[in-house]
Amino acid sequence: MEKIIDEKKQGTALVLEEKKNNTRKLFIESYGCQMNFSDSEIVASILADQGFNTTQNLEDADLVLVNTCSIRDKAEQTVRKRLEKYNAVRKINPKMKIGVLGCMAERLKSKFLEEEKMVDLVVGPDAYKDLPNLLEEVDAGRNAVNVILSKEETYGDIAPVRLQSNGVSAFVSITRGCDNMCTFCVVPFTRGRERSREPQSILEEIDDLVAKNFKEITLLGQNVDSYLWYGGGLKKDFEKASDFEKATAVDFAQLLNTVATKHPKTRIRFTTSNPQDMTLDVVKVVAANANICNYIHLPIQSGSDRILKEMNRLHTRQEYMDLIDNIKELIPDCAISQDIISGFPTETELDHQDTLSLMEYVKYEYGYMFTYSERPGTMAARKLKDDVPEDIKKRRLAEIHTLQRVHSHYRHKAYLGKTIEILIEKTSKKSDQQWSGRNPQNIMAVFPKEHYKVGDFVNVRIEDCTSATLLGTAVGYSENN
Ligand code: 5AD
Ligand code: SF4
Image (cartoon, rainbow, N blue to C red; front, top):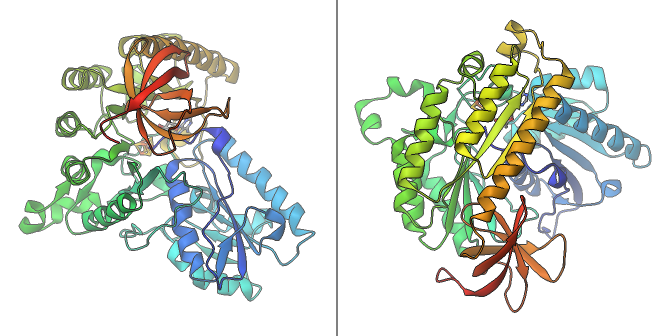
C-alpha cells in the first residue's frame, strides 16, 4: 500500500498544458494515495485526445472528475462533500457533467447513480481507456458506468501528462492492484489483482522524464517488492508460466538496479514496500547504487504479533525487526518510515504497548498514523467486531503521534553540524526567501535561496532542526549537479 498524500495537498485541481484545438474544459481533482494522482495524469492524457483542456476553475468546467479514495471512511466523506459542492455549482452551469473515478467508484459502483443522484459517470481504476465511449453516453444524456477490473491493464502504453508538476520529481507506476489481502484493507477489492507493468515501457517513461530534466523518479505500486514481469499476466499465475518466461522474468530488485544504473545522476525512490515481500536483494541493490535514496517506507501497522496475525500481515514482529536490522547493517544511514493503525479490532492495551515498544526499537524518521476505520466487505469487517471505542483509538493514536514526534526530532538532531545533499523542489511555505527540498532520506530541509534554483542539487550545512524540518545554509553545488 502506498502512502497517502499529505492531506493539505489533496484535491488540488490539476493543470494540463493546453492543446490548441481543444475546446472542452475538464476540472479534475485527486484524493488519497499517490497512485490516484498518477492515474489522474493518465485520465487527463486520455481526455486530451477527446478535446479537453484542464481548468482550475470549477465554474467553467464542462466535465468535473474526482479521483477518489476509500481507504478510510473520512476519505469517502471528504469526497461526498466535494460532490455536494460540484452539484451546487452545477445549478449555475447546468451543462456541467460530473464523474467519479477511482476506489470509491469501484466500491460503490452504480449505487452512486441510484443513491446519490449527484453524478453522471462512474469509472473504476482499470476502466479509464473506456472514458471516450462512456463520455459519448453521457453526452447523449445517459448515465454511464464501467467498473470492470482487469487482469492486464497497466496503462503502460499511455504517456501520462505531468500535471501541476514542479518539473523536478515524478512518479512512475510499476504495478497495479494488490494480492496481499490485509484484513483491514479495501484496496484488493477496489484495485483488483496485482499485475506488473512491462519493464520496457517503464524504462521508456523514465528516459523521457530524464530527457525533460526531471531529477527524481519514484517507482510506484501498492506493493513494489512484489513486482514480477514474465511477459504479462497476474502475479498469482506466475507458477503457470513457461520455463522460458520463468527464466527471463524480471523482479523488483532487477528492475530497480536497471533503472538506477541507466540513470546514475537521477535520484531513484520507490514506494510502498511490504515487509513480507521485501527481499534482501532489494536492500542490496539500494546499498550498491549511490543514486537510490537511502529511504524505505516500511509499514508495520501494529507491533503485536497477535494483531499482525488478525490483520493477515504475513510476518511477525521479530521478522520485521530482523529486516530492519539487515537494512541498517547494509545501509547504516537508511531512513525508515512507518504506517501504523491504532485500535484494530480486539487490540488491547498490551498490544498497543507492543506497538510503542516496536517504535522505540526502530525509531522511525517519519510515520503515517491512523485510527482503524472499518471498511465494508473486508475480512475484518466480516469477521471482527469494531470493538475498540473511538476515544480509546484516539488516545492510543495520540500516544503513537507523540512518540513519533520524539523519534523524528531525535533522528533530525543527528544531522546537526553535518552537510547533506538537498534537491531543491520549491519555495518554502514559511518564507519566500527560502528554498525547500529533501535529502536522500526524504527529510525536508529549508535554507536561504541565494543564487540557487529549483532542480539544483546543493550541499546544505544543517544548523538547526524541528521534528518536521532541517534548517541550514547552502555551501555549494553537490557533485551530482
Ligand atoms: N483503517 C485505518 N487505516 C487503514 N489503512 C489501510 N486501511 C485502513 C483502515 N481500514 C492504512 C494502512 C495503510 C495505509 C495506506 O492506510 O496503515 O498502510
Ligand atoms: Fe497494502 Fe495490505 Fe492494503 Fe495491499 S492489502 S494495499 S499490502 S495494506
